[in-house]
Length: 351
Image 1 (tube, rainbow, N blue to C red):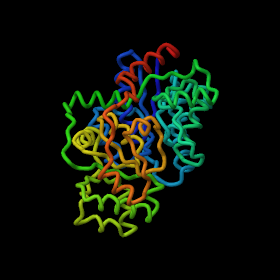
Image 2 (cartoon, rainbow, N blue to C red):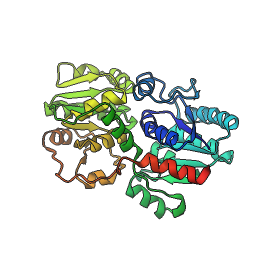
Image 3 (tube, rainbow, N blue to C red):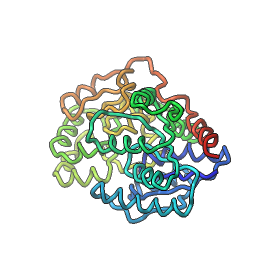
Image 4 (cartoon, one colour):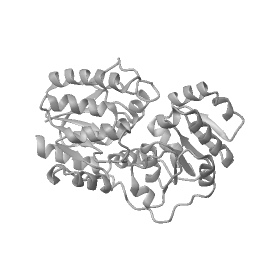
């Protein structure tokens, strides 16, 4: 049996760690395709090196950030040629990025089944790019693997047949467990706030970025800001990068997954607009201040561990100073063995 797995961005790489191991354990041959969607070394190669991921058999080196149509079309054409050559039994895609929807469309048009990991997640914002990608990928997928109960419920409510919807848990939980154990990462509280901001609705707005930075600075707490390359260029463009100097914010370069988890494990709190970082913070029992209007995982908010504040400076400051989660910490993302269940299901259906 042969599975063609498509990756292209940081969240894909982290999920691939546990999936690659599970497929190998089941004796399934994996063809790994990297679309090149994240082409910066810090955002791509460091993850492969740090996680000791297998080298992709195919790497698209011509994708550059730009319009979604150009990027998706380039990747779709590239993946189609790979599929025609490899003829896998099933194509495996992750999440909601352009790489995933391009791979799903190329595959289903060649009558190759698609399995979608992290299907069914909804934010109910119709024009959100991730929402569009995920819904389109869900529609053309033969097998759907939601990672949380609310995503499973969404798929069933939308009319997907129960035999096609499997709730295995979250492979991010698996990968984080693997790295935590292998690198002997211990959680602690070293007194600093870990911060990331990368979503376009924030970085494309000088007003929002200025407000977020002001809210964080007003907290007067020590902050480590892991700065995405695109965020840095935008702050330079807006004349805001210099406002961080001589403040409580220390700028750090993007970190590979292992180094990131070490920083995360020692943080007091996380301030982020990233859906993936929120999830990784929750797994380490770190309170999350969400600077995006997109909630994605309502279970985290309902559990009292994620506080949506948007870009309002006052709310950000107050959240950093006073937000305290409850003692209860529900196992939202499963037990750390989702990848094994996915590999078993793929083998049962497509071998």
